[in-house]
Image (cartoon, rainbow, N blue to C red; front, side, top):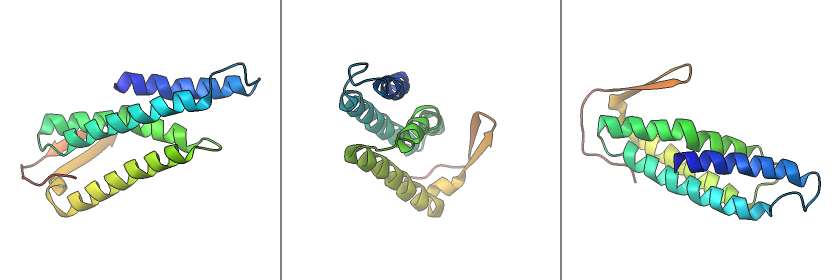
Length: 135
């Protein structure tokens, strides 16, 4: 699904460029947009579940999904000149979820994790295990 989101995000960008040369040059924007949004929210849910699992390998995989697919897609969506209300709602829902989850985690068990970014790599240091979970 990660690869599908990357392709859908770039397909939307390419389609938008084609539509600038005439409305018959590309697909209806909403067609790609709906599938990009569905893929984005499903992949974000998967990343969130992995991150909140408490298992070091799963947490690392959740961060990897966010770093490689979800965040780049959100960035492309936020640059659109006139995003749909559905896209804005999806972006806000994802942002709010992670702000809530990470904010709560700063007070709880995720403070046991250290995230270190080196260039394009992300490393997570895990110190102990707890039973708290994200919602």
